[in-house]
Image: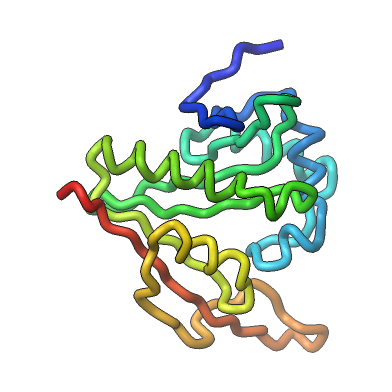
Length: 177
């Protein structure tokens, strides 16, 4: 068992780097059609999850969220570096743990840490149909800055026609500046 690289902890959670032992927990949520409904990828097979985990282990932008009490890895927060002291934030959690405040708790802590490290702005994009996601962003103090209409697509229909999607853009500025 490799040692955990812990980024920070909250009352209920350990926020850390991914490790090989996360494979089964990662597969549990990345293979769930409901969990990835608004993501730019389809549910992953076990082999695809294995490949995806290699990438997650090799990046510092993907942060695994682990429950302190059971040591189960229940989701992740993405904090991608962008220009101008900006981060892009995203999150995906195991559906069995939705509604318990784990996403809010982990995001709030990582946002506070990023701002204290000099980050100027954090933004997130989400599908307007993904109400759970944009309500979380609003609860975290993000403001909706844009509603792009039919600006992206991930899939095509059975006839090869593009399925366009709208995007909300939310952002939060460092209040300490």
